[in-house]
Image 1 (cartoon, rainbow, N blue to C red):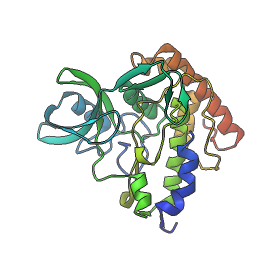
Image 2: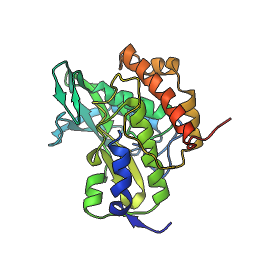
Image 3: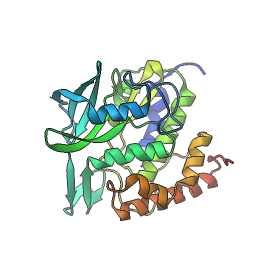
Image 4: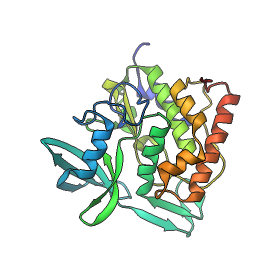
Length: 281
């Protein structure tokens, strides 16, 4: 397919997906949680997870934007250097809040970043950067691999940057919708999608406000018949309460996990009814 621009391709497509409401580095979607791919000089995701948990902290900087006040941490271990984003936000409030809608119960929690990463890998999507729990200087938070040489999708649109593989981008937009629907993330926008346009790479960040307890799908959705990879379809169909509890225990409440399981069932039924979810096995 010929090259096009983010503005032309994403201008309508991302609005439909993002408002509905990797690091998967490399040119392919990760199909398994510990699939070996290049992550900041690490041989595989498991190595990067261990590095983020155990490497020495050599520098901490304020990122300078974001209401969650994230910090960028430089880590070093065994001659390797890698940067990561450290978040410690942990807010639960019953006061009326307005995000992109009025909400009585509002949560903004660092543990949701880890939960989003784990669900992303359970589904075989591979778009959320590697994220772990870590204590730094007496504070516990989420530590997520910093995506070097990336730009926000909004900046790519504003600068009219080129897209190489448009089919791959469209598929990733559909996968973004699947993840956001399962975790009930209605805060997706052009500034929490990162891209490397010249390398056709795409990353999803900022999930600390996800995991609402609604046992329904978000009202807006991607209606285009964009193909879904078979391995993601298989993982989505097999996602059950037991697997979710095993992966998310200590990160989400029982109510959140049960709501997530219900939404995944509804999503399978919806995608099946529209004929876009492949039958596997």
